[in-house]
Length: 110
Image 1 (cartoon, one colour):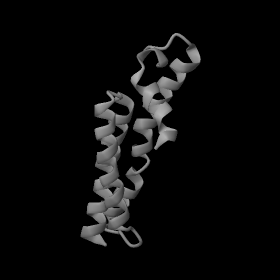
Image 2 (tube, one colour):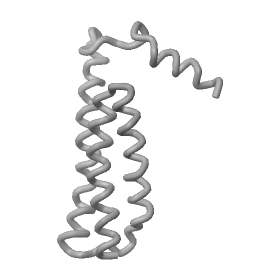
Image 3 (cartoon, helix red, strand yellow):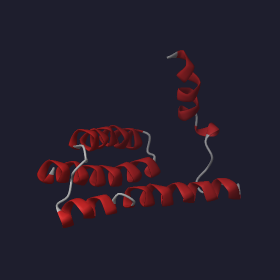
Image 4 (spheres, helix red, strand yellow):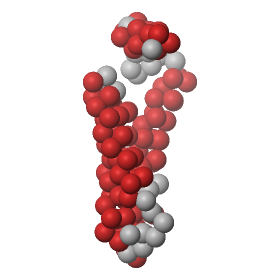
């Protein structure tokens, strides 16, 4: 656990973080890219969800795997809330919805 001490201390030090919005344009671009990725990533699950619910086809879809993904999303949401990180919180809330939809569909139609 000692190897994580530096990361823990950096996360707690407000001077170690970039201000939001960042002064450096490269960091601003990265900040915006994280929000785009946080929304677009979960949306890439829509074809899987459509296949399951529209065509009632869940062959080969593991409810255990997708349910586990949803469970771990809850942990990430908690982490994002505790650390007040909107990007993590938003992304994993969306992932939770999508992963739960796939897991439920696999249970119903699998």
